[in-house]
Image 1 (cartoon, helix red, strand yellow):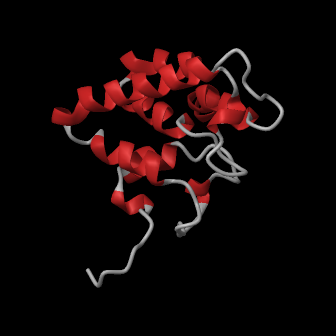
Image 2 (image 1 turned 90 degrees about the vertical axis):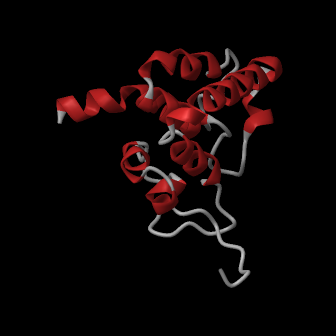
Image 3 (image 1 turned 90 degrees about the horizontal axis):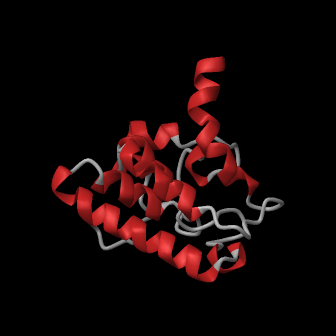
Length: 135
């Protein structure tokens, strides 16, 4: 390493899992290369950690804390990472894809005051497996 700070790339995580998360065109995960100014490190790190069975419960506990944060604030405004993506969405969906027994955490994360006008992309994730069947 030459000391240069670089953003995590899809190849640093579970590439197949990350490909399955690319359900909307404007997702950072749809880009060929991810810059430091974009927010994908969270889901890339989660996907990488999920490849290690020994880390599974640590990832699950982190996911539970993310849900507690969302429920405590009950306002999507508090959860935006940038102007395009809400913190936690892709990471929790990745967990549910890898370990379906924890899919309830993704559901619990979608708070009652979810911004369906600006963060509606998150609501399309649960339907992604169905789209694969229908097409």
